[in-house]
Length: 178
Image (cartoon, rainbow, N blue to C red; front, side):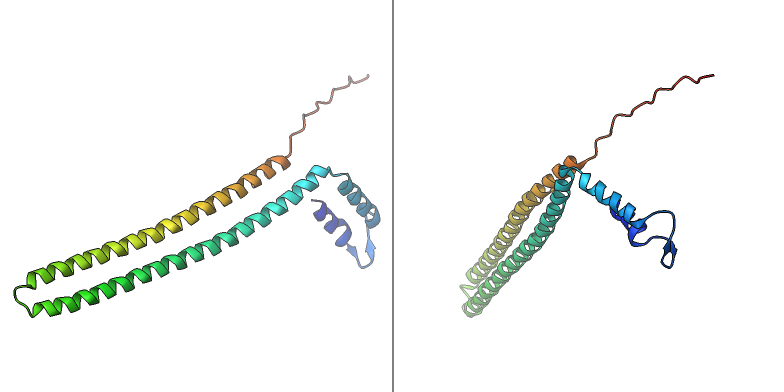
């Protein structure tokens, strides 16, 4: 509000050219400076705390974005490794299956082993994916804790600077003299 008053009265006064009417810029500036200097130290500290809280929130957002990106890359890497392992196991299973197809007696055994390998590969892939998701969940939990602390700090700062309503002073009426 003091900044707005300074803009209206000192920085952008109404007037025509160099002529300004109704008040003195210097007097208004002097009163604004007096008001600022009389503000309590706690209000200035609260403003500093607010700026620091905003900086911490922004830093937390940046850290969260970096952490999420790292977790996403790690999960993608794990999924790719699982896919490569599955493909390697499937290729091995196909080669084994083709070799066994030539032998009539062992055909059932080959199919059974191929199914087991495929099932094992699917289980391994699912386990790796769960591991990647658990890791991402853990990272998000840690991030939630950090953001919770920042929000608590912000709430405390807001409570410290919340204006306290002054007690209303009821003027006493003077009896009218006749």
